[in-house]
Image (cartoon, rainbow over the protein chains, first blue to last red):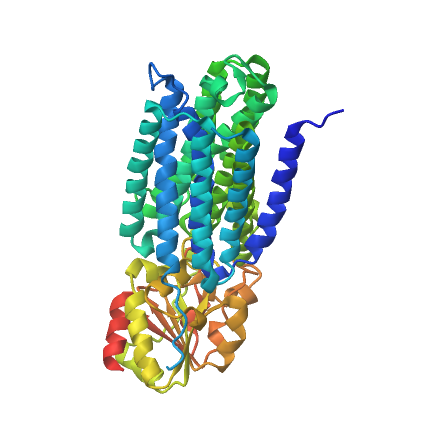
Length: 102
Length: 465
């Protein structure tokens, strides 16, 4: 009997939760704010679904109800992707070590 | 157009890059590289999506336009936002993830053919379940984050909003969501889909209004977790590995942060979520507030004490963020260091309005991160330090948490500030902190209260040093 592909996806999901668990516990507490902003940015990978929806229109009309929701989701996710990664970058650039000579 | 197998492999690669992005945050040195991995993962995921649809017609142009519009707004916000506003920003971003998840679910529900999920009214059962869970969690994330944002921004009062029958009402709504999903899957009715969304928006709103301002670290972490689960739900619908991996990562990340925050307050997750903390304590603490003597001083006294100290520990809290005093504080510390005084910073896990809030502010003010310590690392040092300088923190220093089992904060881990030879406490007035309880520290023999705005007081001390 063939295994439903859903089971494979479920396996990936469960294993990723464990990976997430161990990786996040190793994050130093002083970087918890950047952790939140970067997780924000990466969860916006939901944009891939939005893009598929946005491209669902045919050549006659780009816009249908579904693709309009897709375009809106693209804009929202893009705000998050750019905003999230850039603000994380900005924060991380501020973390500096003590200068040795002092 | 590339094959489905090839694109699946690329999605896996971008999922792995996201794991590396989080892994990088284990230390500040590797974190910047980690962020680049994250960006690379995102670029791969988006590019592969374009290639796999193979549709570069006019729709493609619109996709690019919307990415550009959203991207410029995001970039603009990222560069302009002051660091003190990070909690609001993160809450706002969570709401966008939630809403994007809702929109994608709507698009997939209206046009399942585009996603290979069947036809309208005849969507594959599994996909419909995943889609409706993703949509419901996304909607909760959205409305919950909007309320969190409004509370953090001060547009909405930070005090808990409670009413009679709140918990039973929430319970009924949550049960109705489950029932709606069940009915939706058996009937495929689009009306039920819209009702499900409306009810989910409502519960997100109702769940967050009873939670008070200082519990926001837990709320933000929890919403972070929800946004992850919403993404994972959509990932299952789209059969997309990158989304499933990311959703799981973000979901567990937010859950761990909520756990850490709850532990920092010695409260159970449910205690925080059920809310109303601090609202009921008010009356009791007011009635038994006796007039106890308090020693208060000015900047001159504080400067004198610090000048004669050999080691100083700084305890920052939310008040420092409100007063924007981090730069003034760093200048004061620079002056102290010139006088060969050892200075370190002690951060309580729930100081501020989000996890790591204080660390970011200190980093912004150019405080080297190796001078900043967590509670467990530094708590034993208070006994050997000469001066503790408490700026904008309150409940997290209250010795009552160790001595009085009746106190609502009993058992909460606190910084042993009172063990210092002397304590300087910058505060605007004697008013109790968020938990609504008096801080015993105010009345200790070795405490000197400095009643002033945190920023102004710090600047004045620097002048007097």
